Every structure is written in C-alpha cells, then in structure tokens.
Image (cartoon, rainbow, N blue to C red; front, side, top):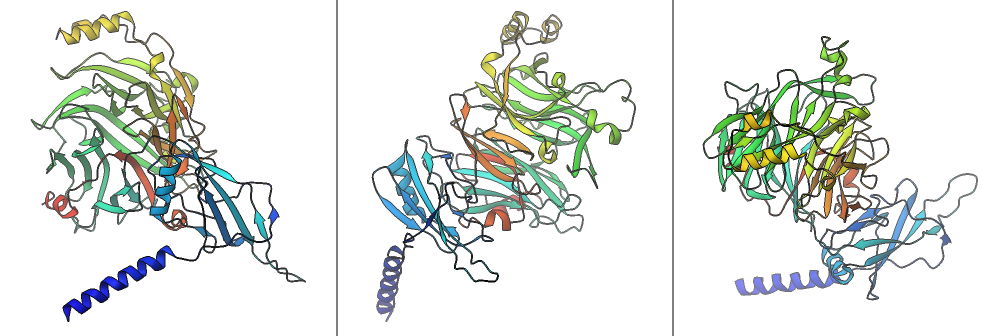
Length: 535
C-alpha cells in the first residue's frame, strides 16, 4: 500500500511539473496601434543595467488604465518567449536565469503590448491594444552579492509596534527573518531593533541594537552570540551608529543623544537631531570602550572605515552662527550642518591621529552624512542635504560620489602617518600638523541613482564595488524602498527597484526598507538563538 501511495505521489509531481512547463503562453495581439513611446511599467525597468544573477524583473502596467499586458522577451541568441497575465508580467525564475546566462555582457530585448480598458460613455468602445516601443535590459558581466538585509518598519512617525530585520536572496524572491522585536519583548513599552552591521560583508561577525525593553547590543563574534551594554561611565550613551574595522575585532560607534520633532505643515514631516554625539571605539575581545573624539561643543556621527583600515571617516558639525548659538535647538536645527573628516588609525596600538577635513560641504550651504567607501578605496558615497544628519526624511537629500583619488594629504600629515607606523607620540606629532587636505576633492551628485524631489539615503557598496544600493522615498514620498545602480569606471547607470515576485507588492507592502546592507552570505543564526541572548 505504501509503495502504491509513493508511486501515485511521484506521478502527481511529474504531472504538475509537465503542466507548469506547458503553461499557456499569451499570444501577441493580431492587431495593435503603435504607441510611439516606451511603456509606463512599474517598476520602471526600461533600459536598466542589472547583475547577471538578479531575480526576475517582474513588472506591470497601470491597472487603472489597462486590463491586459503581453510581453515578448528576446535574448541575443534568438530565443523568444511571451509572458503576461492580467496587467502583470511574472517570469519563472528558471527561465529568467537561463536568459541571463545567455545574455551576460549583452542585452535582453523587451516588447510590451497593453490592452486599454473599455471606454464608457454614450457609446461603448472595446479596449484597443497598444504596441509600445521596445526597451532593453542590459545584463552586466559582474554579479551582485547574493544577499541584502534591511529593517522593515512602518513610517508611523511617533510609535512603533512590530518590526523586523529581514534578509533577502537577490537571486530569488526568498526573504527570511533575522530577528523581530516581539520574541524578546513582553513589556508594553515595546522594543526597537536597529542598526544591523557586518564585518566585510560576512555574517560570522555582526551586530544589531535593541532599545527600551531588555536593551543592549547583540554582537556575534566568530558565530557566538552575546548581548553587550556599551554605555560606560565616560560615554553619553550606548553605541549607536556602528562601523566594523575591516580586519580587527574593533567597532567604531557614535554615541548620541537623539531627539525628534514632528511637523504639521513641513513636507519633511519628521526631524531627527542630536543634542550631543561623540565617537568611541569598542574592542570586542576585551569588552573595552575608548574615546575616539568627544568635542564638547560639536557633534560627531556616522563613522566608517577605509577598506585598508588605516583611516576612520566620519561627519562632524560646524559651529552655529553666533546669533543663534544659544537658542533652543528646536528652532535652530536647520542651521546645523556637517562636514566630512577622517583620522589616521594604527591598528597595532589602537591609536588615532589628528583630525583632517576631507570635504567642506558647509561652504556650499550643505550638510554631509552617511559616508561609505568603495571596496577598492577609490570612491566614497554619502548623502547630502541642506542641513542636519538624518536625511531620510529630507526631500532635498541626494546621494553624492567623491573621487578619493583627488584627495591628497599635506606633507605634514604624511609625516604624521609615518610617525604612527613608528608608534611615535601621536599627540606631539598631531600638534605640528595642519590637519587640512591638499586639494578639493571631485564631488558630484549621482543623478542616475537619485530621484527628483524625494529623499535618498543610506548608500552602500556591494563587495565587488560594481553595485550601489540606497533607500529612496520616491514613488509616494512616505515609504523608503531599495534601489540599485550599476557602477563601473566611475560612472553609475539608471537605478532599478528591488524586484519582487509580485510587482504590486512594491506598493501594497506598507513597510519602509531601512538601512539596506549587502552580505555575501545569509545570517545562519536562528531568531530563537538571538532571543536567548536577551535573557
């Protein structure tokens, strides 16, 4: 009897496989009107450059205007296939990856037909088919890291309830949970989880924070999980924004006293600002905290390391104008602006050199935040707006690119770096430096990644340096979503939205994608194992 059941199950599986492979394909309309324009598909994947291992770029026509959609996709070797059901085009993963393999370094051609909805009025007119101008999807030879992670949270402004840190396989549509704030919280005050971070894109050394109930920093050290309280007697808070050193078990943090105000008329809706912030260094091996910089009058935030670990970059505010210096920050926050600095670092002695100004944004009445350096060390990304340090709610915030090859230290700073190598007295050497960089760096907005009138923030690089990712509030101004852009030889290409199995999910999933980070492997530690670290 068992043998009979097993045979029937096997036959049923084979039948379902054959049925799916022989699924009816939509026909190309026998007659259509030329639209003389490319289709207004969502997401907009027209003429984008994508990785050779990305998940299918499923899309749809506006359901308010169309009742049907047919797409014909052609590969350079002459193969063609049609797709379409209702207004959506959803491509099986196996077929899509076969197309990518056949088109690496070349382009896929996409032709789209859309059937208009029937017109209603004095006379009833049957909807007509429109034939849109074809577009291409360029397939880069370079792959993308297989995984990204992000925090999913409603833009609820004042309160939060359920939130999670999730990871997504970019080669498919698989999304799994790293942690959620319900499994370790039984207090009505709730728990906030944030700031997931990894060392060199790998997950055996990683961290995230928990705030309020059972708060602390969850640190994974060589795969072992523990909770750490980073608040020490000489710091203003626990660690906030983190940056793992690329080679050592060291993490730079900012410590922050952060506040929010909520607008009723301002289109930026929310303002997040610090009344104090410093930089600290945490030694994972010894559980010790040391001060990097704690200027009592200025604000230091968003540390990030150079790929060789020899410099720590960060943002630092400039003094407020004298006429408003003593006023309440709730009325002066629009005057707070940040420049980009760095300090040389000696990993053997854990000592930092004197501060160097890298980019003077305030001279152009701008403020720089969230610096991230490319894996090859040649380029630096950052978000820039007119003021402040929390640009994800600022409509004028864009992503900028700096060519670090245009930045050179003065001779005095080079001597300082040499002195560090010799483990000389850094204080004495620092007093003799000019602490200024020799030339103005080449800086430009990444127009291909940015949108018009919506906030872009949280820029980051893939491990091979060929893909840039950011969070953007384009589409509706409320929810931040993930956008990716191809980067090659200093040039970025048109950004595309993170693909989903159902393209409509990009608007029906009422969550913001916060702090997207690349990973070369998934987090293998279970939610339950993280939960146990809180108790």
